Length: 226
Ligand SMILES: [Ca+2]
Ligand SMILES: [Ca+2]
Image (cartoon, rainbow, N blue to C red; front, side, top):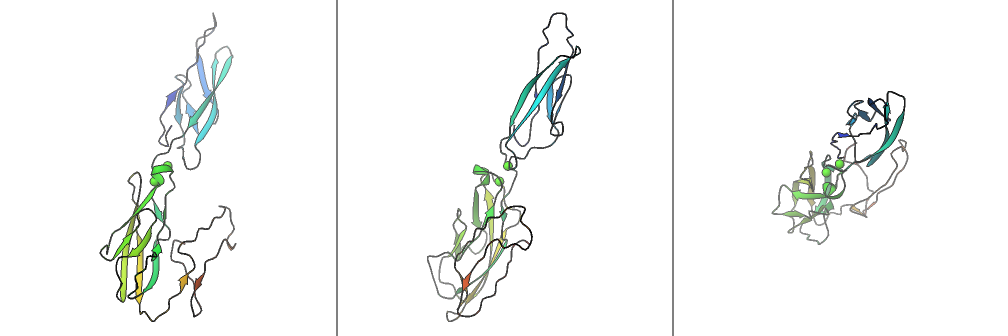
């Protein structure tokens, strides 16, 4: 059953000679599924979310007017649909680069996450502006300069799309300040930091750290979603 669930039907026989033929169906976990007591059609009361739960089991009961009953197991396997678009995090990037430099290293890595799995969760990036000067690795999100950059400011817009064709609702914005070759900008020790934490972490608890090196004291700030 997909996250957009369909109804299906259960059936039972009441073959005892002379017994009542009137069957009634009922189901456990009525908050999630509902069953038509006459036809046995099972309906969804509450949407499934593949990202939360991929299987679900419950019992259905068929009983006759004589008080006899039997039970069957209904096992539901939820299949993934593309119900999540990529989301950039962070959505705004501010970096500086030195004029006249051309490096094989990426200027930065943009990142969008998609809660779906498989192809539906695969994110590809595209540069929507200034593609004559910059290019992006569509799989990794690494942003490179195509040529030596003159001093100035650049504003790039980057989109993300998943394997099912859903686009990120909000694009990423990259602000690049190209500074004098004499200036020394702080340099992060890594272009991308991955920090894992549990969902029930309390505010104020340290979950990781980042580091940049520079000849002068460095101040840190964040630009993503709060
Ligand atoms: Ca999904
Ligand atoms: Ca998706």
